[in-house]
Amino acid sequence: MENRTARLKRIRILAVALVLLSLLILLVSAYIRLSGAGLGCSPWPDCYGQLLAGQASLHSGAARILHRSVASLALVLGFVLVAQCLRPYLIQPAARWATALLTLMILLTFVGLFSADPHRVWTGFINILGGVGLVLLSWRTALAAGADPAQPPPRPAPVLHAGAGLLVLTIALGALIGVRYAATACLSLPVCGDVAWPAAAGWSALNPFTVIAAAAGPGDDGGVALHLLHRYCALATLLLLGLGALQGLARPAMRASAGLLLVLLLVQFSLGVLTVLSGFSLWLAIAHSVTAALLLAATLQLLTRPAA
Image 1 (cartoon, one colour):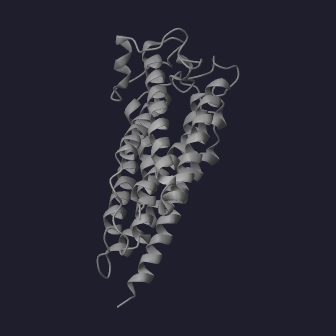
Image 2: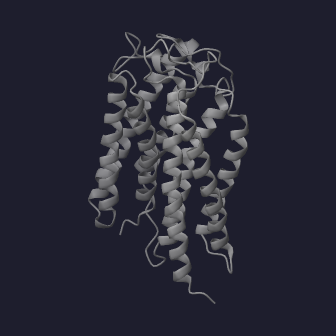
Image 3: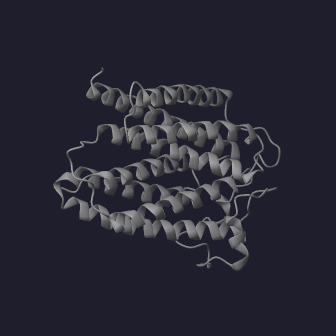
């Protein structure tokens, strides 16, 4: 029978390859979505939401071909990864995470069938969160395949768990800003003009199962609500994950992961501020989207790292 160590190494290599492919999918998808929406177009912001108005997308066909090619390759590798985890004998917990990854890939493939209409909020919302999920589950599989069974299990980290939950919520709110074309609803920092808390009428923007007809203009209640909630959750995430990372620096086994998390937190916070100050530069917004997935993966790594 094949050596278990050799199989784990092959599983880890496949999982890391899927992490890289998932990041590329996320990057190209963000480019297609944001450039198609008119983010950073000229004259800004008059051209924002051009897809909703029935105008042709600005992005090239090459981007779509690249996205589909990479997604197809990732799907094939996903099947290979699951097969490696299942045969000739089951390897857990890697098999559980690899199966979840493949299931998400198949789900996103079906969601893609409904993604042609930019007016549907839920398809874009699921695609964005699904792209982040691909990175997360790929990395979780790699961590499971590389874990040392002799190491003690990680200790509970309430601050990190709370921060991770808020990070997911922050990413979801950012996704809603994008798919509801609400970037221009708030172009100032730290609050939206003189509005510091969402109006009652704006909370309906949290519903992803809706159809939109036009981009949210400056001061739109729903767009303002999403921006403010996104920023407040981002600040709380920064504080909680920053505190958890600082605590991790005191433990030798967690020091490298904690340091990486701190760096990504600062990079992501800076990208968020610069994206607004730049008038929603296309490439800053794309970098902000991709770094969010890296930040979530780094948080996961710290959560699964043994403290001893």
